[in-house]
Length: 113
Ligand code: 5GP
Ligand code: ZN
Image 1 (cartoon, rainbow, N blue to C red):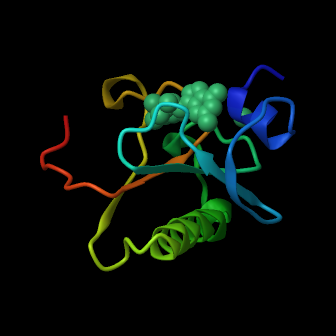
Image 2 (spheres, rainbow, N blue to C red; image 1 turned 60 degrees about the horizontal axis):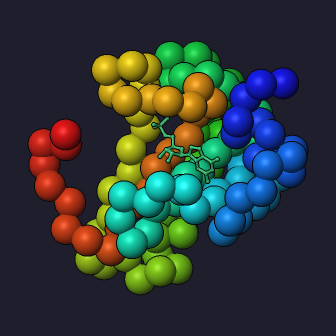
């Protein structure tokens, strides 16, 4: 198993965990791009958004709801926060195990870089 996030899920590599349930884990990004920068990661290995099927709809919904709960717990539900899925090279995906970035605590610009 060479996937970094599978190793974090398995507890083989430490992470600063902020949430966990039977199918998801969330932890602080090692290189935060905002005061809050959490990654919501399914325990199941899915390389990219392109690999999702209808069977994953509930899982992805749970990821979005976990992101909203994590942001709300930090008081960012009102001010706002950003969620991002990067998919493949041009979007800057570097870890090929899907993850939802949850960023908050500063003003975000648009368009993104
Ligand atoms: P991507 O670029 O694939 O959308 O996002 C991967 C994210 O994983 C990056 O923001 C990067 O900082 C983060 N990351 C990479 N290696 C580690 C690690 O070992 N631990 C944690 N917590 N985050 C990591
Ligand atoms: Zn994986």
